[in-house]
Length: 460
Image 1 (cartoon, rainbow, N blue to C red):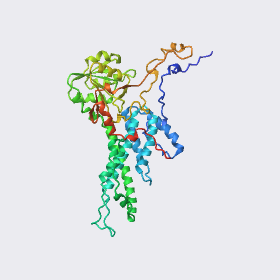
Image 2 (cartoon, helix red, strand yellow):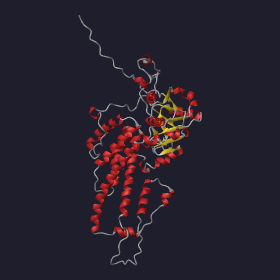
Image 3 (tube, one colour):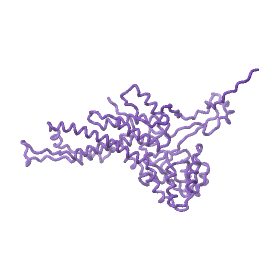
Image 4 (cartoon, rainbow, N blue to C red):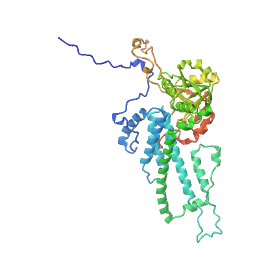
């Protein structure tokens, strides 16, 4: 008698016709040796044999990290490791060589996860730090150097009327390299002084002193950059505290707050208001299809905040009872626009319709120097249709198609929305409150104009 063998469990396969709007960059599981391991700097780009392996491993690790805060911190730690492992050679411009090494790794990081704009933000911040530390080191070196040469046998001090070159003037001239070209920077030109040629003509034992000074200044530059990146990491870790301190000034007694989805910055902001004995109520839109609003509602209730969960489609119906909308952001663009979770544009339109303030809370690591129309910016990402539909329930629809073979059922699952600056009332960052029209000036303080596109310099 033949005993039928048990069939293996059926695997749920993704129908090919429902994947027309699937994620173009699916998140693949990283190799086993990378699971749970910290980010490490890839091998030097001069080693061509391991460049492909390091690029793929780096891509897998970066794609695994989720959340702008975690991505920003991991990127800063990785770039600090790159700077510490970089060997300062004997080239004249050590800052440019160090920036090129950071730019090489940053280019791979951005390519590995282009939708996470926090990666490019941190890379540009580190490049700006290198330039600032190089200028500071140059200014300090000039201050310790006497530009005016002492009188000798050929020149008498009474007849020596050579002008001395101010260290502050040279430092200001070097600092102009970090600013965008303007009429003011064109007019701020330094006249050529004979003191420069006089100083350059000095030879002898000064050559040996300059070589030893170059080595010490090179070591100091590297040490200062590493310390500055450490300060950047501390700034990322502590970004919630200065933002939460402003909650008391914004949330008043017996107000009704509306938010969408789940944002840790919004959560800490509401926590701070509750700790200051503010009595308020929160409407949480559930944030379909991931329903992160359910998680936020549970966290707020545990802190004693009166919370009401509503569907995303009920925002327009409930907005008339709301005093303020407080939301987080995925990225803040240079024009004051916001890339936020899907559904946020609908909330902003409802708030504008009913004259309700729309407030965005975000840390400085989310401030992006790019504009939405830049080709380097990916405004959206399409997730798997399985978040919306159960393929088992819709299996009967697989056989329906048009005459040309295209399916009749398509599923689109976008991740983000773009909120234009005209719909935003106020930005709350770790540096204070700002209007959307001021964001471009605030962002200009963190980045250099020539680092907007992270690309390695051509060696030709």
